[in-house]
Image 1 (cartoon, rainbow, N blue to C red):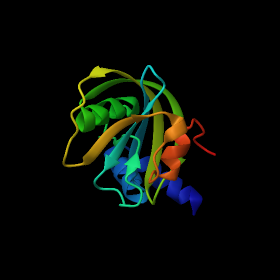
Image 2: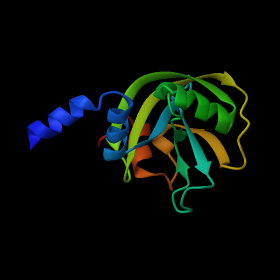
Image 3: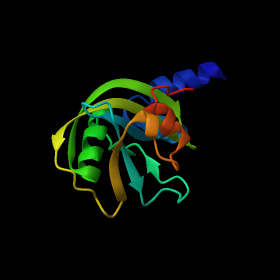
Length: 151
């Protein structure tokens, strides 16, 4: 049976192979999080309107657009949500998320811009020292802010 499948597979080269692969495999959303720090070592946290009321605080996060490089997702999301500019740094975490979601996190350095939050999505944006992170923060984002993504 395996030989027959292999023979048929070789005969259906090109777009048909890709279509079969696309239909047979899971598609993933990629959530990209930025651990954005300023020159003082503070971390940028956003109070999101869309998050559960008991845990509204978190790091800037968004979904990658098809074809977008993940570090640039953070640059785009931070700018859209806060008006701030950042320079992406090293990859700090890649994990599986809820269902068909992959979670990627990068360090990022605040480089400028004027704080102007997107009121549709963001209620508040503030810089915090890691010694005084707010209550109501997602556990995974707290670990990332503290520098231990898998703890």
